[in-house]
Image (tube, rainbow, N blue to C red; front, side, top):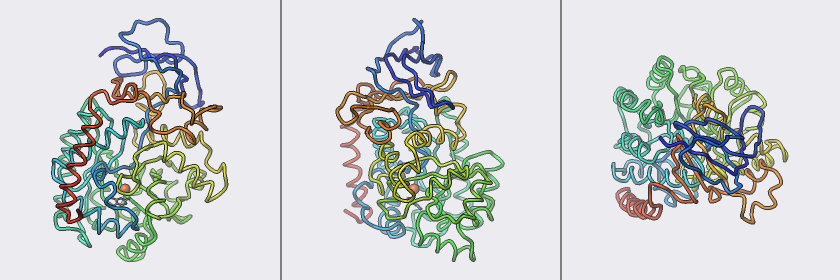
Amino acid sequence: MPSTLIRNATIVTMNDRFEVVEGSVLVRDGRIARVGDAGGGPFDRTIDAAGGYLLPGFVQTHIHLCQTLFRGWADDMPLLEWLTCRVWPMEAAHTAETLRASAALASAELLLSGTTTVLTMETVHDTDVVFETMEQTGMRAVIGKCMMDSDDGVPPRLRERTAESIDESLALKKRWDGAAGGRLHAAFAPRFAVSCSRELLEAVGSLATGARTIVHTHASENRDEVEVVRRLSGGYSNLEYLNAVGLATPLLCAAHCVWVTGKEQELLAERDVKVLHCPGSNVKLGSGIAPVSDMRARGISVSLGADGAACNNRLDMFDEMRLAAALQAVRVAPGALPARDVLWMATREGAYALGLDAEIGSIEPGKRADLIVVDRGRPHVAPDRDPWSTLVYAARGTDVRMTMVDGIPLVENFSLVQQDAAEVAANARRAARTLAARAGLA
Ligand code: GUN
Ligand code: FE
């Protein structure tokens, strides 16, 4: 693999001291070899950062690549109606071909806006296609097939038997965990307590603990959901129920946690459960504002994700960062979630949530070279007084000049290296029309 010198950069390292360094980064064998004064070589090629910010690639800890084709077909509804009337019918209408188009579209959008790693919950079937697509596009991903074995309001094609759901998850793990040189990982992904039997949740809890595998789920996103869980579980609050079935462990990645009581927050902190905050989704579905600054003050890990194009409708981490800070300003006061902390959530905290903190999340020698360059030349970021403010409040996904994963440039000069973005979009448009027609939503 050719070694690369990235020169002429302001390096926002995201190390423990939040150091910002002027200079170059040397990348060798897919990893960061030197930071700052990278010397005169040897190296095979150079990338000119043109004075931009060099950052670790963003880590989005909650997303559904399979829902990218649903963008624009599922607007303006609250969660449970959005799921039953739009998302589940469309997931049920997916074929391997439309799923491939959806994951490719997501990957193009994510790489172009600086996200290098995702934790993604896919649909019930054909998850091999998503692993294959991520293998090809070069992104880093932790992927779980959606598990759902209770049938309330669920189209027949998405209903699974408990054993079948577990067997399929284990088979995917066997085929894909550690694939693409360690770039791909498998997770268990029970959808949420509403669509999973107690038996399934208990089985996932013991399998995950035994195999040290991440469990990716949704919890306490919306008040109606919390009430349904209380009814189904015989009176538990959502996180207490997940604890009762053995899932409240450091391996649990729980998206949303908007409606969590003080007692539930204590449980999240005590068990080191990872909270995945999705501000864009929470706002558009009208779910509420998560108590992010309170949870962080208790020591709970809170990282960020766009959730999906069906609810967001963007997958741009810059939007999520800006909204995360702005929502805490509304809920508490301006400054309740400072810009520098938000950038930490978007990089280091995401890496930690996925158990990848030793590998990614900062620019330090030995870590994998998952790097992005954010341009600083355009009017909307000037006068660019401070990197934290510029990156969280002013910059946009379209400012990403370069994206690299494992030392391989996937975006250069604001364009995809391996794919034609217009072709990916055109293919997605065709696939979405046939999918929506099949779902009866055309
Ligand atoms: N809860 C259960 N399934 C989903 C989903 O697909 N998206 C979101 N945002 N919440 C969910
Ligand atoms: Fe989600």
